[in-house]
Length: 327
Image (cartoon, rainbow, N blue to C red; front, side, top):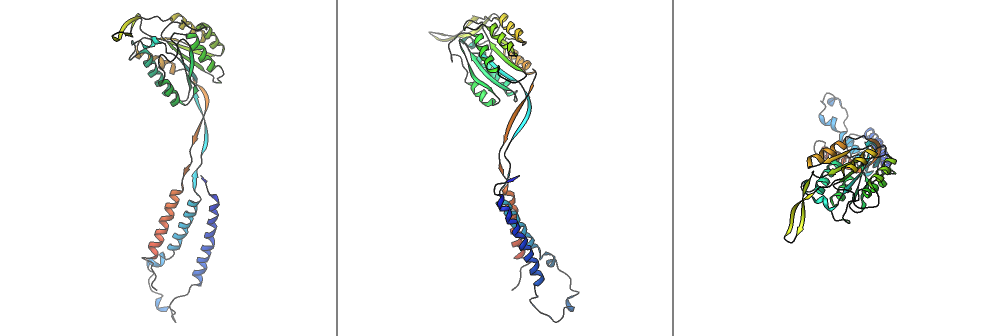
């Protein structure tokens, strides 16, 4: 507890002379009616008013004390709390080539991948997570962050056609590695999701995997798509028609990437399988990291002002009802 106006607390010292004056006044007080003898009143019973006659002054002192404290504006302190939690650094590298519009996963591969990735992010509250997207080229959609609300908004905006079409797996992996290479986390992970074969870019996927291994980064590769053929929306003169197209996934290269880096290769042929893959990744090792949380300042003077008002009202009520003086 701190005070915004601590100087006001010096006013509490004024209560001491007020109490001293009240005691002095009681000793010097004289009866308003002088009698030659009080013997006739010695056996008179004491009424409850005699016991209450000091209460108005006591209530007034309490009211003034609470009012002064309220004027000093007590507040809960604002501070940074540093907590040690468990987490890892994760970069998600997501394929956004046009083949991700295939509808073997519902409603299509890209939307299914985004939905499951969002659920994964929501379940990893203490992790630094970032996002890389790639097709013929790659770029960082979101750097490593613990602000998952920002990450989820950026993930929501990811769509096919944002960059030139193609599948540059090597570029997508290399960009994710560049975001993790300077990380101090004990455990660094890349989740690479694609549905095709590497057909663009100057960096070979295996070369990017070797770079990841050099920086101690594990890569979990996920191949999305059914075996054989998949329904795909095609623009025709009569509008968009769904046609069956052949599914080509370089499982050998994706498996090799995972093996080089100490990760694992997964194949997701439907939505349920994709969910299970992310659950499996969710059970990975965690490492300690430091998180700072900010607590806001709150005003506490209200309850002190309320007590001051209560004691003032009690004093007035007693003074002008039960203890009212007759002139």
